[in-house]
Length: 357
Image 1 (cartoon, one colour):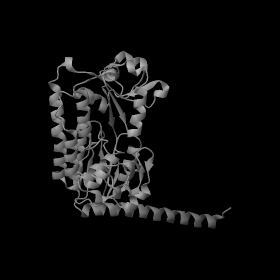
Image 2 (cartoon, rainbow, N blue to C red; image 1 turned 60 degrees about the vertical axis):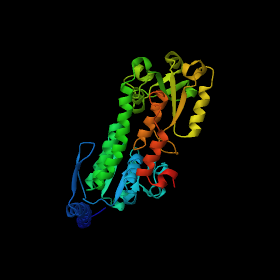
Image 3 (cartoon, one colour; image 1 turned 135 degrees about the vertical axis):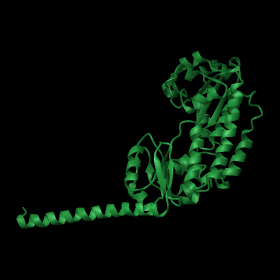
Image 4 (cartoon, rainbow, N blue to C red; image 1 turned 180 degrees about the horizontal axis):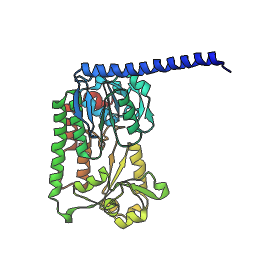
């Protein structure tokens, strides 16, 4: 037990330690603040409506989403990325030199703040509104690290995000060209669908059959891919029955009652698609009009394999074009998905993004 003299010394040491730690923290924030002022920061409003100050020249970026990583690379910023999230490591469309960078965590389980600090980023690019995004943004901003928050809810968000990243990188011309490539094709798809009469709009089921062992399937209703079915000239049976749900699970009885004209099965790789098609070959599915008429199609989604287009980011327009040709083959007969893909990758991706090397 400490006597009065010992207790006094202990208090003195404790106070000194607190002062040292406070000084270190204040110094770090002061350095960040001084750097920002010295670099004549640029002010922009991100997609969360936040006013953010970033250095006029951004040279070191930590990015926390594979689709934002992909867009940064298409805008010529691959060499500026110093840290990534864990999902960026498995994307076929991100160059290997970026996929192999330091992983700082993810937005669901959280990130390693110390690792981010060690990378000395000029800015962090990330989503907001789910997982641990709120606390991550607060922690980074508390350290004086600028954060640009983006969001993916629909096609329009993709081009807005691309233009925002163009401002971050001082690459507004390249960003405008990429967004324009996407916007022009998206507008063509919508304007074409607007002329399709109701009597010529097929009943469409967009689904994943991964829970079939429970005698249920996932359907895409009031979700990005689900609403696309209607935008492109179809009638989404799941959306009509479940307007307030994004991915309702339904029974085979419900599918039989819908009896769709077109079935589109989504999967992250070819093995998944093949496995799901095995389900469609059973007797119950054979009763459906779409199966009888050979109008069951598959689409690769995500970014894990070559040819997966339906995803957030620039490839989304290619996925929309694929859907359009499946839902309305006559109206979109002259739509050249392969040609558009070649143009996109040639103009905006390097050869490494095409080969996955």
